[in-house]
Length: 386
Image (cartoon, rainbow, N blue to C red; front, side, top):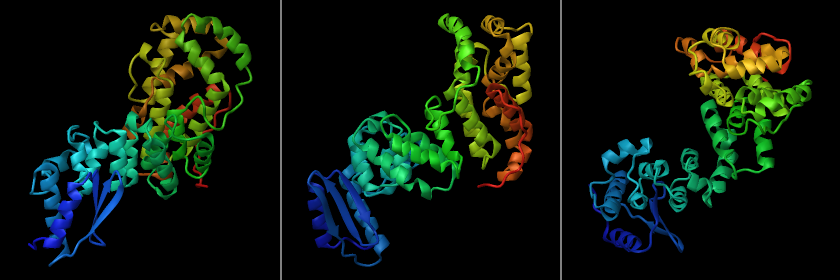
């Protein structure tokens, strides 16, 4: 293996003797870049022999200086990198290795700080690193939060995988990262790819950019429900929420996604978002059911059978004309992504074929949405993507 030239070895050691915060290696131009409080410094390499072998020697020098491991980046750290299990101490030293995986390790670490995020971003500005760093509250609230969010929004049109789109929108919608104009631009993109909607349904279910008018009977029903709400009846509070303009917007948006999900990731994420929306009333009667049929049967028992809960009985006695809506609300509270598992576990289909297979799951849920919206139910039919 080629040894480092004396000139390169000297210049690299001088670089490392300074206040270096991070190292990045430009392999195409054979240059080692260093970040310091004064800016960037560069060492142009003069390789002898094969470039890949020469760069290995460079990384050995960097590793020996940073972590006392002349053999290079430790294999055990590579295994831990994407599990977020890198030790919180010494993260700053990992940024001096010139190793992409070491930067990823810092980005994923629980010990990440806003300052470390700044250095890691300089070393390796990738969308995945930005998403992972924005999972840390210190980064969201720090100087790097908006910088990373702006980058993700700018590059979002180049993402094609629904799960990445969902994850990105969910992350950038954290409080303080985007303004109303940015949120409106993201919302408009959902007209062409409804995966965008799911991040909104998760992060801001009661404040969607496109609001709807309350149900026509909302004012009258709210007057009846208010005494129960003041007494702490969670079912009355959830029902009033559903009849309001924000609740109608949530239901309509969820229906739009459920009628034409692109793949299994969208289905699972949507059902989880709906489950979170109804979570306030779920703890009072148990966990998610394993099928739509089980959730419907359980809702019937809770609303009319021997298992009827006191709060539900009070609600039914107060607004008996909303019995169908109450059953729909309770049924949806018992559902999560689990109800789609029996179908999704047996197929890898996506698009129209997947939606066809999921009709026994999708149509009953759409029927519940229709009841809560006071609209006639229409079963799903194959539609071409706009």
